[in-house]
Length: 250
Image (cartoon, rainbow, N blue to C red):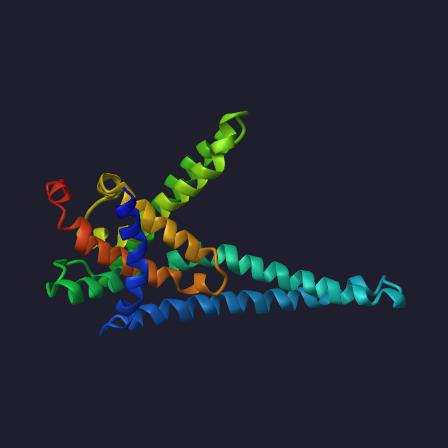
């Protein structure tokens, strides 16, 4: 089990070099730029709305309390930073879903030398990838509600922090393995079954992604690294796993 956890975690370190493979870098840069422009616009727009509000608020403040304006702007800066930190990953995953699927496909071709057989158009792939993200959000909401209820039960709630860490690792594993598995038309229920068969690798990988997404700035690059790491593990551990290869596909 420990060896599997280590294998899942180490895949992320190995994944960095995969982002420079021919034909892969563009799928890293484009969604990153889209998200940076989106959040940059939202911060700029928020600044435009907040400026007259601060001016109106300060009109009621006596001169000796002018230093409060600095504190108000500091609050705005902290709020903007927290919004980007917590919202960047889920929003980025939805916007980048089609690009991540293509990036995973390109990496798999480079690793195996074989084309990923698919007759699906880019538009269909984009729709399927975004729909998959929305399905996973529903799955997350249901399990999160159950865990929240557990935290309200005296005694049992002592293990709630550990359960949240395990749950988060599992969800991140589902999130990123969806790209290489989805490219092979493996449906969500089957993805869960395969990942559960190699639970140590799944949780080790997801735990590593969780650490990356919790570090400011680093979380901007966690997504492409996680897609590359999941694709690497798919090729080395899941696709070649005899127990997995006998599983039905849709």
